[in-house]
Image (tube, rainbow, N blue to C red; front, side, top):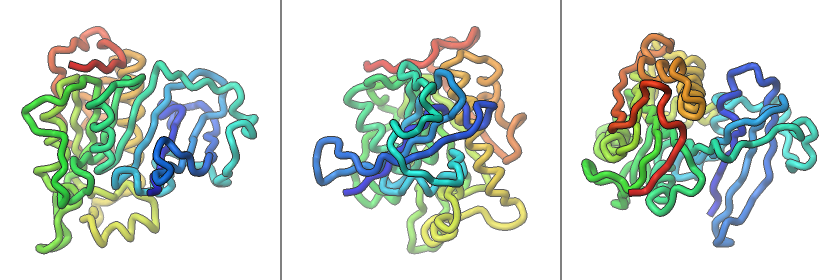
Length: 294
């Protein structure tokens, strides 16, 4: 089986002044089972410094290649595939593993949840885009780890970014890409760390994919339609939320936290939001990144 995985040194720098973003692929790596391989892509700033690290597991539990999302994470034009040691431009870039987060899309949230149910490891925050529980985005295979209001056994700062059309089917006989009963709010009600939920109301489950994959996704997932749709802006707004959340948590930055708590003021897209701090105090910046097991 072939999976995709990205390591991003930075989401915090993708939309800042950290200079050019470099990308390369390490190719296929075997974790434990030789039948299960991961394609590893790395996106890194080139400006010297220490940066947070995000590990990104894309849709369909990692089956969707990360290159389908490159507009959102800013891939340079050359698409070079070289080993890290050949990239002299990043020799002074230091990945800070004490600031490690996990980012997922769609049913990859299930894989992430399975990991966190066992151990926190070095992880300190998570970001779930359109999260679906189960091993497929339709809930056909009844394999769930969330059972709200029963809490999951881990607590970590979490940002959930959902889409208003996640649960809208393209036809009467076709399930939605993220049915309400197995997605988004189901995760929100199962997480008992500081949890932030933002719904970008006009867009669909796969509207953050690049073309031509975005066009192909319309055969399965309901997209935004009409003059209200600005897909480039949508992806920019998603990236802004991811960036601000990483800054807010790791940097204990109250100004960035305001973007997460009041996104209507800062984003171009129409949004709805809610959050539950579950007793964690963010009056003076919060506890930073953390993950604990009950």
